[in-house]
Image 1: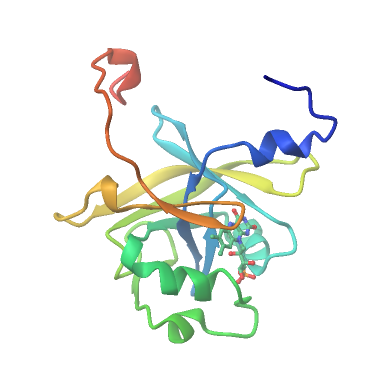
Image 2: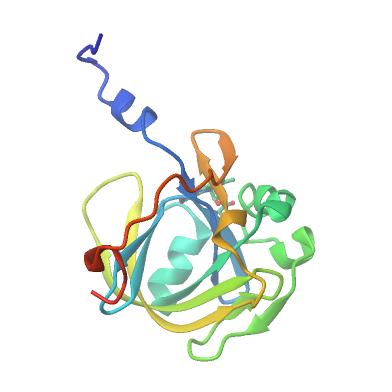
Length: 179
Ligand SMILES: Cc1cc2nc3c(=O)[nH]c(=O)nc-3n(C[C@H](O)[C@H](O)[C@H](O)COP(=O)(O)O)c2cc1C
């Protein structure tokens, strides 16, 4: 039986998991699960960052960021970069990750991540929520030949998960990015 919940937060608690990404700006790394694709054309993504995070300050200044997709084996690094602030700490050293210069934006990307998206901020949503969302238009894409989406790491409200199995395929044009 379905019930009406007085606590509106229960609606968020019911949501399924989101992909976990490393957000890099200059030489800092943070972890975000508030991450989504935004648009096929132009290819864009969006990331939600709390204003008290050091990364928020960095993105506001630099107006660019990179999304680095970890795999399940990098969970220990996600835990390090997602629990300390880079304001006074070098998280590349702490997590044993290495950086390389990005191609288009003036920043760094994580060498060990199989996918890196270099993004330019094209819009910031200023609605007064806990997370402030940045829309980033993708400027450059790096993908390891061995990369598979099946190996991504998901997260929501304290639980890390792996991606589930494919249960059906669909061929509708609209559901592909050539729309
Ligand atoms: C799995 C996971 C997901 C997270 N998702 C977000 C998020 O979407 N937005 C956010 O602002 N912080 C998120 N955090 C917290 C930040 O990554 C964390 O506070 C980090 O230390 C901030 O780093 P900074 O101060 O160097 O920017 C997440 C942490 C973890 C472990």
